[in-house]
Image (tube, rainbow, N blue to C red):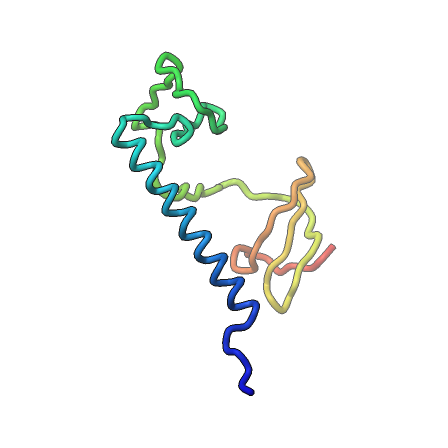
Length: 125
């Protein structure tokens, strides 16, 4: 006797698909009926407040900020050329790769540098 081609999992999968299709059809019909009656659901609209949170109420036009177009920067920030030399101690230097870090003695900040930026020979320490 041949085994049935319809397994239990196939039947369950088909039932679930049919159920989802029916639910989707009911939702579409409910939206269509609401649109024809002119009932728009408020929960379909979401607004963003000035803090970036989602709200159901529209923003107050009195709190609207005017931003000048000149204040908007498009593109990447331009590199600034520094004429001043950073004086400090070399904390790390990789001779093979040609880069290192200099610790500024006054501000204790660490700066990355490449050997092409250095005029003198360098050693760690």
